[in-house]
Structure formats: structure tokens, C-alpha cells
Length: 207
Length: 207
Image (cartoon, rainbow over all chains, first blue to last red; front, top):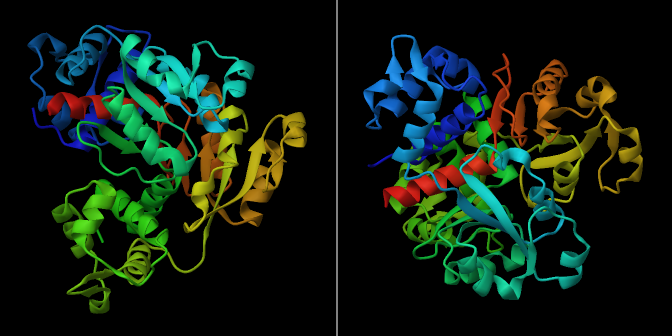
């Protein structure tokens, strides 16, 4: 299946949005999805139609929220099991993400935090276990961690990403302002406030 | 100019990357840009060629970093002046962003933080002035703030976004896990770790 990156991200967000709905089996129309997401309904319909979904997902009243979410997740390569992630670098940003509530009702589970400062690990309170960075090679395979959220100081970003790849991590979300160069066998996505602001500004200039 | 959103974001990130280079006038080839960004060089060339750039930007040895960055910024609607932003909601995530170093060498300047908790404002140390949320209507126009980074608790996201729109903010980066419904006249971009992880997972499944 060749989904474009924006399409995959929209579908992933859509599934997440549907998973958060309480009325799980109430039909939801593409117009309502437009209102909820802010994306044009024809974009949403196109994204969904690119997946090979079972016919039961769609009725004349709209999509079944729960079935659609499950079907999207399956099309995007998720089974029923959750995907484990960890946070690497527990400074202000990383430790803030330890408390991020957005993982609830998502297919991702935060299951560990790492920091090179052992004192910091002992002081921080967290609902997940925290480990010193030198234990990554042991802990990451043991906890079957596939994704890492990178929050180390920018000058350590590249080296830490290389170590994470070496530990078997498949995907890295880079929250540092440093660009991490491509690493064979690992998908890396940088999230930079400045670049998100730049994108917003460009869209504002175009309207 | 009708730039797609991914193209605008790539160009914005590219300009930011070029601005961070120390050798500002050394030519940079699209192959080198591919290595730095991880995007295919033909995508980069296509993005750049969609802009109407002065011929001096491109030589046989490559692009002039500084001229290219400036030309991209201008094409994306930036002049020489910086764009002011603020952080709204100074819990762990918002206060972590107060220390974000990525604004340096970017066209964006962080110039204020807001929180409804007056005690928190008094306790927090920050290099920018902090204000109680009820002063937004006065401070945002006075400091010519165009962008807000939304870090309030999720249940306050929609209302706070509406208030920001009312204060004249043009763009909002929503870091809360709550979806903010579209608001007339404001560009909103949600950044959700879970959706970024979902996009990564989808790309991994597709390869």
C-alpha cells in the first residue's frame, strides 16, 4: 500500500479522533469529520477510499466510528497489540512528556524513560519506570520498545539516535532543534515548533 | 502562490536549516540538502522551483545558502521583521517550551507566556515576560503577537483558542491532545505525539 505521508498522518489522526469518541458505534458522516478535523470532506473520503475497507464500515448514514478506526489501524499496519515507546532525555521537555495524557485510547503505550543523569532519574516522579541511558541496550529489547521520543540536548541528538537504532528502535520522533541525519532502517520524524510555525505562516501568506 | 502544505512546511524547514549554517555563502547542492534533510533531492528541487527565485540564488556549484534562505522566507511571506509568538498555558509542557532554544536564528521570536494561575507566573523563571491569561486581550495586540503555542489542559483548549482568535492571533499551534475545531480567520495546526507516531508507524508498515 503506497500511502503518502500526509495521508498516512491524517488517517492516523482520524483513527485517534474516532477512538476518543464515546458513542463508538454512532455513524459519523464525512461532513461531521470535516467539522471535527478541519480537513475538507473530499480529502477525508479520498484518504479513506485509498484503504481497502470492509463494506460494513460505511452505511448510508455514515461511517461506523469504531469499525472505521479499527479498519484504519489495521490498514496502517497495527494489530490489536499496543506499540511501546520510550522518552529519551528527561529535561524539562522530556519530563513534561512523561505526563502527556494523549497516549490514552491510542495504540501507543509509553513504557519507559531514559536519562544520562542518574540523579535526575531518582528525583523525577513518573508513572513509568525510568532508567539510565547506558541501560538502553538491555531495556529497549526487553520491553519491546519500537519508538523513541528524542528530547536530549541538541548536541547529543545524532549520537543518541544512532544508539537507539543500534538498540533496535524502528522509529524516532525528534523533538530537539537539531536535525538528525537519516539512519538506515529507522524512520525519523522531526517535530520543530519553528517549522510548524513556518508552515502556518506560509499558509497564512498564501490566503 | 499555491503551495501545498507539505511543500510549505518543507521549504520553511529548509530555510531554517540554511539559516543555521555557519558558512552562509558556501554553495549547497540539492544532493547535500538531501543528505541533511533526508528528503529526496528531486522533491527539494521541485519545492524550490515552485518559488520564483532570483537567478543569483542558483549557480552551477549549487545554491547560495543565505540567498536561498532569504528568498524562501520572502516567498513564504516573511519580510525582515521577526514574527512574535507566545506560549499559553505554562504547565510542564508550556514551561519547557519557554526554554526552547530552537527559536534562535529563526524568523520567530518568543515574547510572552500566559497562564491563568498567577502564583505559577510569579514562581516561574523565564527570559520572557509572563502574564495572567486575563491580560491577553491587552498584551497580545500591544506586543504584536501573531502566533500562539497552546499548552493548556485539553479541556480548556477550544475556549482558549477562541479567546486567542478574539485577541487577534493569526495562527495557533495546538500542543494539547484535544482537537480544536476550526475557527474563522485563524490557522490552527495540531501537533500530537500520538499522530506523529501513527504517521511513522504507517510509513514503517508501508516499507
